[in-house]
Length: 161
Image (cartoon, rainbow, N blue to C red; front, side):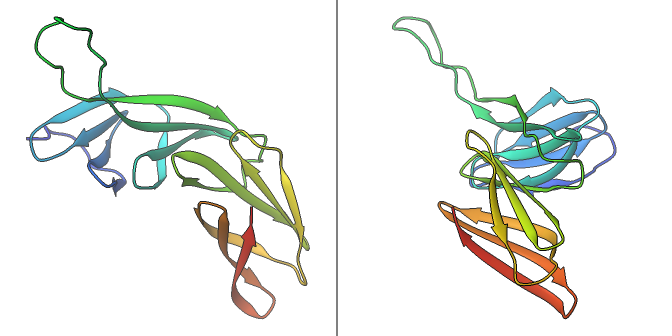
């Protein structure tokens, strides 16, 4: 049982399901459900190992399941539990964020310039052939795909990181 409460956004990683329920984030698999308090956060993305929550503006939380490390003779193993780390990107509140390999990535544009923020890396700028407004970001390894709007309609921008 996952308990009672309102269900918000949900996401499936490779091994866990994640559900927002009020100020709680619930992680579950076939045998256990774990909760973590995450007030004032909104689930916005996930990848194979993590979920991404936006707190406000450029502050995010990346959450995943952590398996406790045990020393020799420390007793029965403990089940995995959800843990989160805070990520501050200097992207504006209008940036579209996503995950790539458990790391936060965000994109925003102004006119013909696309800015890409990556956790642990400097911001990268790309000049576009026309005005582009990002709507969705996906990244795998070193490839970035951004779905957005141009004056002509929808377009996908693909860039190497």
